[in-house]
Image (cartoon, rainbow, N blue to C red; front, side):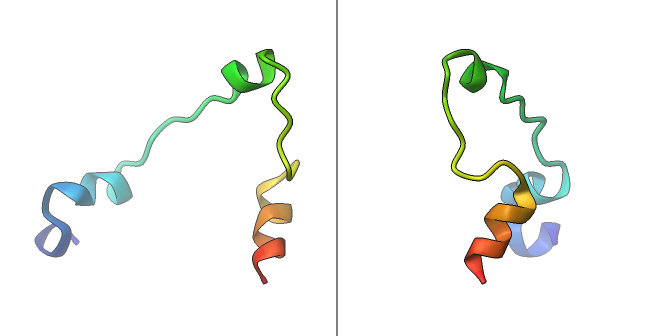
Length: 43
């Protein structure tokens, strides 16, 4: 993977820690409540 993507492989291999508190604290509403619901909509 590192050979193919170079520095960008970090995005896939290490990922990011994501926190939705900033969005929910501003009354943001997600279209889907779970990742499963969002993925199901893609099918």
